[in-house]
Amino acid sequence: MQSQWGRHSLSVGGSAGLGCYDQYENEDSDGWTVFTSGRFDYAREGSVSDYLGYSHLHEDRGSPDNVGGNTPTCFDLCTVNPSVDQSFVRFPFRLSGDDKLPLSLAPGQVQLFDRESGRRIS
Image (cartoon, rainbow, N blue to C red; front, top):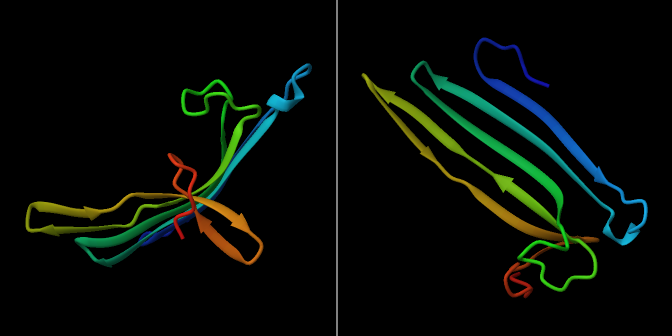
């Protein structure tokens, strides 16, 4: 869903995928993503924007990062992409960031994990 405003912008959306196997049910997996993005035009030549997404994904058992797994590895991922755009006369300038945080949600708390070692970060 996308706004139709002349200035500023706001959108929300999502996607999902489901993999089901007839004989190998332990290989079944699902994945989904929800996101929102927006832009605030603070001046004619400048704006602030952000993308925020949350995903529940998986790696197939045959992935090189999942050697010897019995089932697909499921994980949650939070994505944040803030940016500031500004033009000075004829020179555009953009400052942006991109961060992806693997999450494991437990009731009442958020835990961060290092996917390489499997150790809890926070």
